[in-house]
Amino acid sequence: MKLIQNKLIRTIVLVLAVGVLSVGGGFLGSRLASPSSPQGSSELVMHDSAGVQKAPSRGTGGTIEGDAVSSAFQERFRSVASSTLPVVVELNVMNTVTQPVAISPFDFFFGTPNGRQPREREYTQRGLGSGVIVARSGDTLYVLTNNHVAGDADEIEVVLDDERVYEGSLVGSDELMDLALVSFRTADDIPVASLGDSDALEVGDWVFAVGNPLGFQSSVTAGIVSAKYRNAQPGSGTSGVTSYIQTDAAINQGNSGGALVDMNGNVVGINTWIASQNGGSIGLGFAIPINAAKKAISDFIESGSVSYSWLGVQTGDPSGELSADLGIEGVKGAFVYGVYADSPAGKSGLLPGDLIVSIDGKDIPDGNALVRTVAALDPGKPAVFQLRRGGDFTEVTVRTERRGENSGSDASKLWPGISVVPLTDDLKKQLSLDRSDQGVVVAGINTESVAGGGGLQQGDLVTEVNGTAVRSAKDFYSGIGRDGEDVTFRVKRAGKSLIFGFEKPSP
Image (cartoon, rainbow, N blue to C red):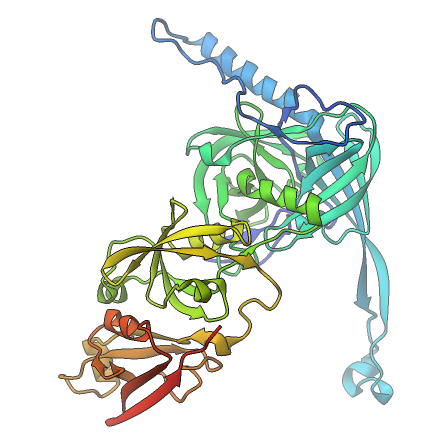
């Protein structure tokens, strides 16, 4: 994992665990495939943990005490370690880096002659990481790791726990989820990891981290699941397309790309980053849930890249006075501030002011959950969105599209392109408004959008939409969501009443 040094975020530095030299090391945990795939078969083999024998539990008619309990735990831990190590691989990677050559003091003070560019040189950067053998198709085996371990590698060497060495090739990588897939070829009998069910994890469950911390190959650490569904921290450089499993199993530099393993030896997560004050483990490690990674594995094998769905909304989590003003106080969901007309959301009838509470029956408690859930949808496949619109619940069927580089880049299709907040007594004083004034205040503006670029300003008081009085944020969103291509706002600015007219963007 990448190591972020000397940067405190609320006194905690978010550290993507890196390898010993330059790229993150990793560790693996998984249950051995049983039976192993037949050699020469071209069928893709991935092992699921369904039906795996659970650890023996205490019966109702007796107890296990003292030494018996210790022995039971010891045997289970040994079993997990022995079944995990054969599917741990070490990844030795090399990539070419270009850097400017140091300039002379003369050039530093007076510039380079004739405006020529500073000279550059290339050098080879080596890194150490790890991965998990997650699938096999014939003589091709696939190793899952982090993007920051192997995503930019020019050469990859795969080293098994028994020291067999193979030449690896990059199948595909994804920066958003920080995952990459490496392949190598052999007819040898090599085990494949069993992928567990990360959704079945509970806080307090035992988990194990196996890998190469600080270059110590195949180290095993134990801990518990400290929390589930952790979001990426602002400023960490970590994407929000997935949540994370938090664990106190010791994770250090060099653990990147490996796995978090449950008590049955199933891979339940790919360890990716740590939070630390000094770059070392303080019991705050974070893993990508394996259920999120399973789709990425299939996408890499099929097309070399991960496909994400695009919805086309601006979303957030209103709280406090705004939540109450919208009439959704205490209701969990993702609030839609704006909709791109040419997006799947716009074409399907989602409206600004909608509160998305579930998708295909899966609860959406907040905006982060919406991003993760939409990203995991199959593009083009219909999904049922349950909404709270005004005071009623309704459903809209949406066919998401594959997210492209330009998805959501045309702000002229964004409606309305502004955000509003309730008019409080404090705002009345700040804006020199009358005590009797009512409406909502323009708080944010996208100047390239239709409404945002039409002359509205921050601090404007919107008092009417299409001739109907606005007394709350709920009134505002109800007004701009009504049928019709044209919308008029009456606003109060510096004691003057102004009218702005807009044509809603079309798909």
